[in-house]
Image (cartoon, rainbow, N blue to C red; front, side, top):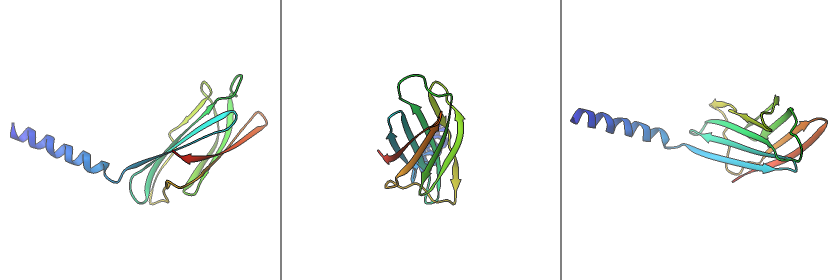
Length: 125
């Protein structure tokens, strides 16, 4: 019984130690027809993983495909992808030994579709 208790305690300590130094930053922005959420999970001084969601909030049917560009001081993403029910949900990327997203960063987003373009700046929530 003591061995099991000891193993459980050790497991919990290891799990909790992995959470220290971890921080999640969420950035949000809206334009006339789009809403964007960008999340950075910071795992230390030079390691993070990012994800984002682009959602059509305009009137009418959403476009089938969009082009997007996300620029931040620590990096970014770009691509041309199909929407699913008006949403593009991306797991983003991970990096180690890289510049990381900071709370005061402003993230610029450009979305292009059907010959139209909208831009917005995402801010930390």
